[in-house]
Amino acid sequence: MGKLIGIQGISMSSYFDPKRAEECNREKRCPVVTISRSFGANGSKIAELLAEELTVPCFGYSMLDGIVKEAKSDKFLMGLIDERAPSVLEDWIHAMFTKGEISQTGFYRRLVKTILAIAESGGVIIGRGAHLVLSNHPRVFRVRIEGSLEVRIARVAERENIKPKAAKERIAQVDEERKLFVREIYKRYPHPRAFYDLVINSDNITPEAAVEIIVYAMEKMGYYVPVHHVIQP
Image (cartoon, rainbow, N blue to C red; front, side, top):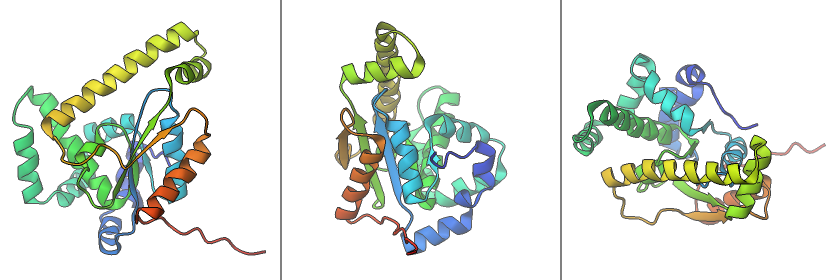
């Protein structure tokens, strides 16, 4: 399994420690990858395996939401988020979220600050428009995992033990929810770069093979990838 860490574990772990963030900033050797995916394309599994390969934590979208909510009362994490978002960024974030319903605006602001904090200490971030928020970050590699509808229906039906028709409806619902969320982020933060650095069709490859492709592409494009030292027998 990938390094999926619980909310409380994140706030007190070395992965979210200010010293780790400083070290990553200095050495520029903490991989940061965003994973955007179609529902049923094995994106979450690929993200978990990739995080394990890169030796960084994996942040699922539900975990991100949890961190954002916890940040209201977690002084340690809130302090790190504020530290990683200097005054210029803070002003930018404030200007970006001055319209709309107050509680929702607050959520988006904390989400952006949390994503920025993760980018400073390394990690694989699943969904939540992170590829847009970090579009101009020089160390971020942005991946999109897709798949044909037929293959995704079969996967979701098997995984959730439901009939193909129900799986198709579930896919349509989740994909639409994700599009609406990303559209809201894009509206607030239209980025100048292309959406992704790499797009993978997962129909005919395993999650393990997809990870190999991502790591290979990162290396060839000049992104840092940890070297795994194999002990010879």
